[in-house]
Length: 169
Image 1 (tube, helix red, strand yellow):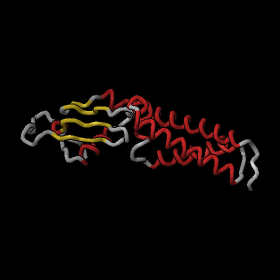
Image 2 (cartoon, one colour):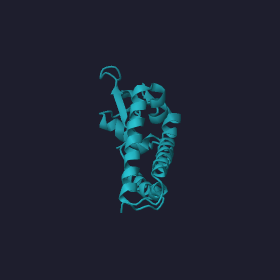
Image 3 (cartoon, one colour):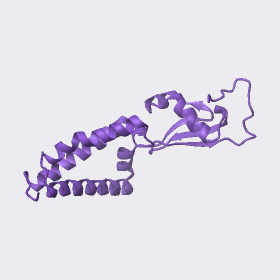
Image 4 (cartoon, rainbow, N blue to C red):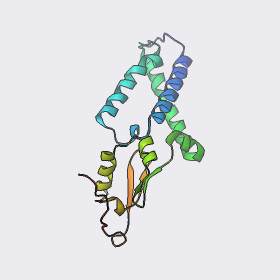
């Protein structure tokens, strides 16, 4: 229970490698992985944790090995959080930057496609913000968290036009 099958430093090294690998992998997979999770996203994260377990513990089932791995992950998380707090450049690399999805009622299709947002997801976020048509949207931003922030035009600024696109329900 207390005997390690590999040296303590190997647990730390393996934990660092797995942490960095998963951080890069999830960062590359897009903002949706970080924000509100769809059921398939949650399943992916749960399976990922199981998939990397043996790569972190080298088959060691000792109590000390588990504690070293856990301490390594918590320590790395603290270091990454501190680095992103103190450095804008590191924050941009780790967390990304907010992206403008809609500006004055015009959708930026390239950014929406790159973020892999469906029209249904975008319309749902706009309706949640109280917008019934695109012309009501002054700006919609995909935040670092994966959430969509919406700022509406003033009510009198955009009366309904004949060619206005009404959001589907």
